[in-house]
Image (cartoon, rainbow, N blue to C red):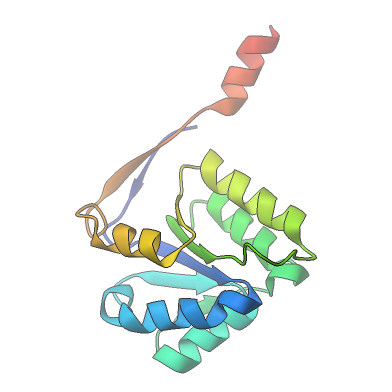
Length: 150
């Protein structure tokens, strides 16, 4: 797969399960000034609520259970997402848990930085790398699989 250079303006996916939406909205409001300098997207209701409550421009995909997680995954594959802030609910089973697992797998495969809690999201935003270009190293798993099988 090789390397991919993230620009100074990061492409950030914002996702939250129902019980965590208010926490993500609050976090986005606290970090509104910094987030406004980046390209934001998110799943269905989460994207709408963040836009409505904070005034930030957030491109909306479908809701998670209706295919939004898969749309975000496809955007990762297409190089359209650099970071993902995903406040998921660790105490409630979701009907689309397999989609969530697939999204997390694809994010790791493509070396996308993932924050799943407020503290991790805060650390990502406060990193000196956040507002700089950054070279991601995507491991060539396909080449590795071919090599191991031949």
